[in-house]
Image (cartoon, rainbow, N blue to C red; front, side, top):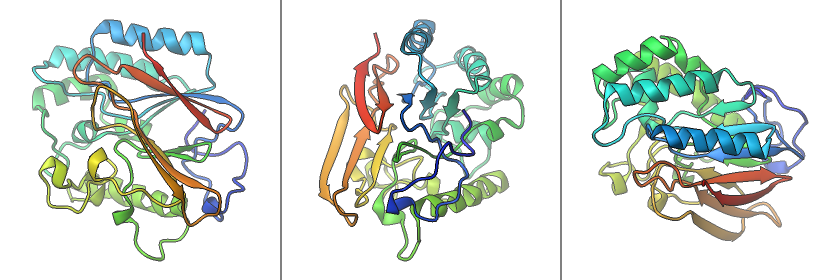
Length: 274
């Protein structure tokens, strides 16, 4: 399944008029979602592939941050890159970009992230190719759930932005152009919980603790690690009968991801990766 295009037209007013690009539409289908990998041991990749095989989903989404780990090496980056190259070739799979990935896809001062080294960049570029960024996306939608690496905080949405789907597509284009040109973009803004001066982090850097929910929008993201999955539930927002609901899936505290999510018929369940 491709991130560009859609199997059906959205009926919810939140998406009225939304362009059809970059949508992962899986209504009545099963989608698996995995969060931050950070160059895990081989056995974690084996577990992930085993889960995908046993669950038989129509779509699999990875929320980014494939690279960088404390004390890692170019060999760790190579192991992850070889797995990622194979995963990128699977048409069922969608791969989002995390803050740790952007610095390897567009290596320059505007994207550098803690953990980056030129030694790892050289290995990753050799395996994935110099145009690897084209194979990744910055956000996606699954059954009207917004998927990003770190979450979209309400502070970043300007008044009068229009349908959020259209606005995000335009922001994706601007971000890619900025990263390729070595210019900053708010997607990589760093908020106060991570030592930055932005009101909240951008969709590649937002800390779960600083995310302001968007009324009526349901989100699944990673980036902020903890031993358990975190959920923010809210009352109905600007859209009648629709709650905002934020799920932070990152449970990788150094041993690889410990959980994954399943979206089916618009409903989300979380399971242990074992």
